[in-house]
Amino acid sequence: MAKSSKHGATETDARSLAITVERNLPESRLQQLGIKSWPKWGCPPGKFPLKYDAQETCYLLKGKVKVYAKGCPECMEFGAGDLAIFPKGLSCTWDVSVAVDKHYKFDSSS
Image (cartoon, rainbow, N blue to C red):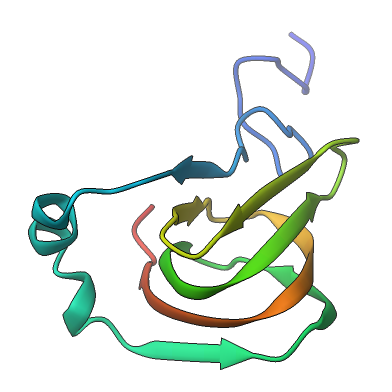
């Protein structure tokens, strides 16, 4: 049997490392997730590379971002009021056009 398999997720498999974005979350969903108790982080506009060693879920309070995942020709765009989930193993570049202020949490078991 061949060593590579389409059934196994690899770091270069862009489909298994997809970014998920939820838009216009109701207050009840924010409370269910406990977002206000998560740590906060912010950054100014600019571009920077990231590699996720754990799944990150973040909720943008302010800002606008385009994320370019390695191996994927299209970008994912999200901003204030959006919840984004970045899978463990994802390598990407954040292009921040409007300064970001976000709540976030990491889940290393993902």
